[in-house]
Amino acid sequence: MYKNTGISLLIKVFGSSPKLKIIDIFLTNPYFDFSKEELAKELGMSKQTLYKNFKDLEELGIVKVSRKIGRATMYKLNREHPLVKEINNLINQISLKIAETEAEKVKTTLVKE
Image (cartoon, rainbow, N blue to C red):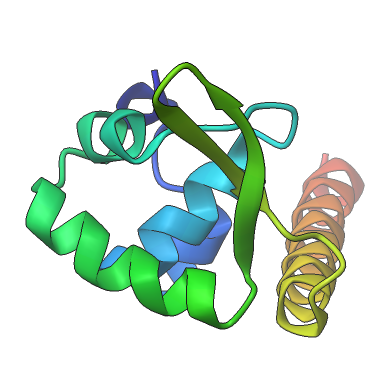
């Protein structure tokens, strides 16, 4: 599902490091929580790479436990974390700039016709 969504603005701007991919899947799917196994599968990442990078995000409070289902621990993005708020704000600003640029192109094209 995530693999088929194309390149997000976050990945396009900042690159595809494992940590950014983890943050991106949560930003792209704001109403879902994921187990580490689901994340590894969806991101096409080895469990070792995911666990290594996920640990840092968890220690920093960027991701947090949302619930437990049996033995599986589910995680979600901590939308109250200052860094997550800044990333959201930055992505919104970049999206707005892109939209303004595209609107200007359309306007220029229409004026020429």
